[in-house]
Length: 615
Image (cartoon, rainbow, N blue to C red):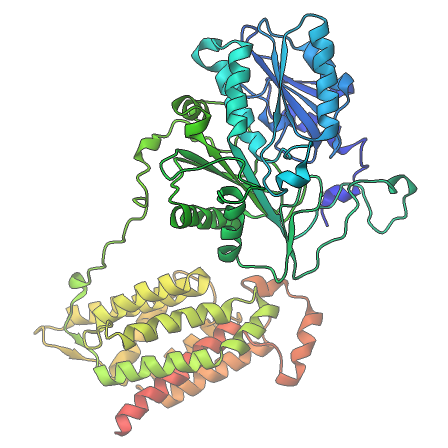
C-alpha cells in the first residue's frame, strides 16, 4: 500500500508535490492558487510550450518544465484535468512575443479545458496553437471511433522535441514552425503498455462506501494474481486484453510489438515502420517497476525489435517518464524519426535540457558510435601461467574430494535455504549451490588443473568468486586464495626447489596459516555464529592430530551444530526476533546456514578422499 493513500486526496498531495518540485529547481515559480508552474528564465523571444493535465503521471508534466523543455504547466488533481481558468492563468501570466504551443493528451476533459483556455487567449489576440498527443494503439480504430487514440508516454517525446525546437538556433523558430514540426512527430508515435494491476488512488479507500464516487470513472476491479492486462490506460481505464496466466517478458514483448508494428492489422496500423527507418525506442516505467527489471525489459524489447522486424533503434530511452501512480507495469513507445523529420528530430532529442523528467541526460553522447551489438566485449581469458608451481596435489584425490564435497553441499541446499529464510535473506543455499555447480562444471569439462596445487587454487578462487558472489563468495575466495599464498611461501622455503607433495599432514599447517590470513578480513571468531564455527575447528583439529581428516571433519560438524546455541553477532541474523526461532526448538535451535553448508562440503571432501585412498 503506497504512503500516498494516507494523504487528503485533493488538498494536500498535488500542491505539496508542486512545491517540492520548485524546491528542487530555483528557476521554477509556482502560482499556488492555480497550481501553475512556469520556468522564470524562459527567454521571451522564443515560442513557449504549455502543457499539463491530471496529476499522478509524474514526472509528467511538472518534471518537464525547464530550459530546452516545457515553459508552463497547469496541474489538475489526480487523474483530473486542470480547469480552463488554471490553464488560462498560465497563458496570461507567462507570455512570449512569439506565442505559445499548447500540448495536451487526447482525453475529453483535457481537450475541453485546454481548448477553451486557448480560444480565450486567441480571442484576446495572443497567438496559440494546440497539439493533441495521440499515440495509443491498444484500442482499435473501430472502437476509437470519433474519439481517436489516447495520449500515453509518447507525450514525453512530444515535450522533448517541442521544447528543443522552440529553443535551438537561438530561439529562431516561429509558432507555426514549432506547431508543424511537433505535429509531424506526434503523427509518427505509437505506444502500448502492460500491467500486473490497476493503481492505487491517493486518499481513496477501496473498502469505503463513498457516495460521491458512485459515478467515478476510475472505479475498477483489481486483477487476479495470475492476470496481467495489455493496453491498460494511464487513468485506470480498462486495457484491450487480459492475459492469464501472466506471460514471461520474453513471451509478452512480441505480443506488444505486434500491436505497434503489425502492418496487416487494419485496426492498429497507425504508423508504418521499415527496417531502414531511424527509430527511437522508449521503455517507460508505469510507476512501480524497478530499474533492474526495466533495463532487462528494454534489452528484451531491443532484441525482439531486431529479430522480428529488423529494427535497430538509433536512440533508446529507459526510465520513468509517464507514470500511472504506482502502476506495476511498463509501456513501449516507438517514434519513427525518419517519417517525423529525420535529422532535425534527432537534433531535438539530443538537445541539452534542464528538465528533470527527461531522465536521459546523455544528450552530449556521440550516438554515431552505437554500432549495433558492439557494446558487448568479451572478457580476456584468464592466464594462470604466473601461478605455476612445484606444489603437487594428487589429482585423483583432489578431484574426488571436490566432486563429493560439492555434491554433499548440494544435497543440503534446501535445508540451508530454509534456515536462511529465517536467519538471513534466504539466498545462502542458492549461493553455495552456484559455487558447487561451477566447480562441478569445471571438473566435468576437464578445465580444472588437478596436479599443480597453486594453479588449481587460483582457478577455484576466480570461479568461486564469480559464481557465488556476495559475502559468502568473498569469504570462500579469500580463504582459498590464502591457502594458495601459504603454499607459495612453503614452496619458497624449499631449498633445493624440488616438488612438494601435499598430503593431509603437510596441508594442515598451510590451512592454519591461511586461517590467520583469513582473520585479517573478518572479525568473526568461534562462537559468533558464522562459517568460522565450522572452519576453525576443522583446521585446528587437523593440525593437532597431524592430519587426521576424520577427526577434523567431526570437529567441523560439531562446530556447525554448536551454532544452534549461539547468538548471532554478524549479518542479518542479528535482527531476527527470538519468537521466530521457536520453530527450531525440536532440532536444538536454528543453526547458522553458512556453517552447515561448509560442514557439508568438508564431510563430502573427506569422503571423496577416503574413496580414493581405500582403493
